[in-house]
Length: 366
Image (cartoon, rainbow, N blue to C red; front, side):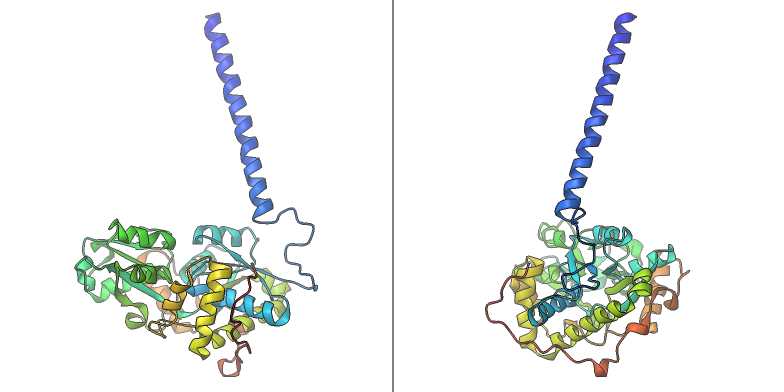
């Protein structure tokens, strides 16, 4: 009996010791992450800049839906000596969303249905501008024999997130083909992982923002089933969203941000040379990708993704609302006026593109 009690006490000490060391290790890792990646321990305020005033952190992913974010930062840095905001790159939508919810990024590029769902949950988020039009595709393996939507019956389709418009895109296409979401198997997958999954035939079709769809084309095993511009014209995947408190306290800076994104969009769509320049400096300095991906997406065809006509149109969002309710990802408790603030949207005809030409050999800014 005494031996059992001693053994029990030793086991309890071991458990307690393990918990203590585990807690310390977790605290250490969290602290290092905060110091190295989130700059928790810097002396300057989180949104300050050398020239004074506010400089918002903006979350983005390395996808063409968010391209105006790095383009605006690069051009303003090159022409004005400093960017008008601080872009923060994330690897996926879960991390991007958590950074916004924590207040680390008071502005972010985010999936439209995700922003709408967050508003339904009471999160103080407002969509102030679009990130793009079109710019997604559904890809299948070139040897799959799949050539139309009906051929996907019983197949596995990868989409970025439950709240992605790509999921609604597939849902919408299924309806038009006389099918339902029960006729396919939908799986969620980070966009960077999709090309490898299609190559290995772990899934039968993939859909996300570019350039990951184009990667499968360039590597020779992917085939376009359809581009979103051909089946859902003026498709919206991601939007620019801002915390209501930032809108209340820093309205001038939010307007400056929206105007900068609008000018970048006009600059990108002004000439193909601008697009090719952007493919180089964004891939090298922001996305950490081979420039051939952005070069392909931004030119083949030229209207594969567009960066003008980015005003908030109620009809576009009401269609997303209706599909979201049908697909079970939106409740319908938030309306257009609840989750948008169109007061920042500039008159498109008055937006002047940035005056910026190519740099030849692009210098690193990151």
